[in-house]
Length: 115
Length: 111
Image (cartoon, rainbow over all chains, first blue to last red; front, side):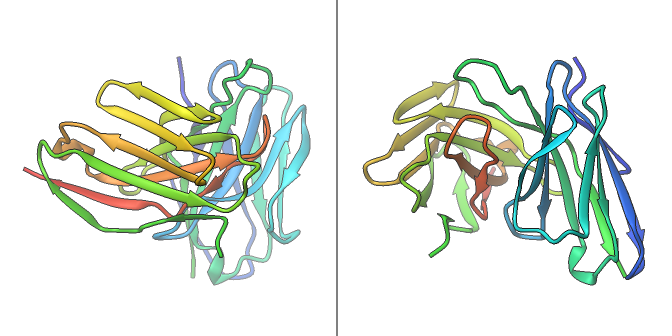
């Protein structure tokens, strides 16, 4: 049973550029959430996708956008990169309807460095 | 006041010790509580999940939730050097909501 996978593992970009990160959820999961984790901090929620729509959004600017595909995989896009966007970007998957057990599983993350 | 607070550590203990990790929170509506373990430069790994108040045990790990005090704990018995990691608490208000994370506590278990 494959867990959550993310690509690429590492990425280096220049200020002002755009980046796309990819995520495949755990088998059987239908919901994907994206988090940003700065060094030494806990993950910060960016947004969540279910049924190919953005369902919830954290306090992140419109430069952060996403997409979910029919196979439940997802992309995170960040435009006009800033130095402060350097972080570990985590994808987490879950199943919307699973009784009382709402568990979220994380992928290994994509480390983005903006220079 | 941050929504979820956690002592960042670092916390150093000898091998075999009982470790107590704690989080406090301000939102009394939180009902879902999780503990994650994160090794350096890796994604968080779900350790324990608890709904509402009470205790839950899984092997060497015990999670406790005290909603009246807005306080959750994770106990690790017979700690091992392989337990050295950052421990993150996370919580949510309603089913399917995104989680709010604490900043994490860095734990070192010394052989």
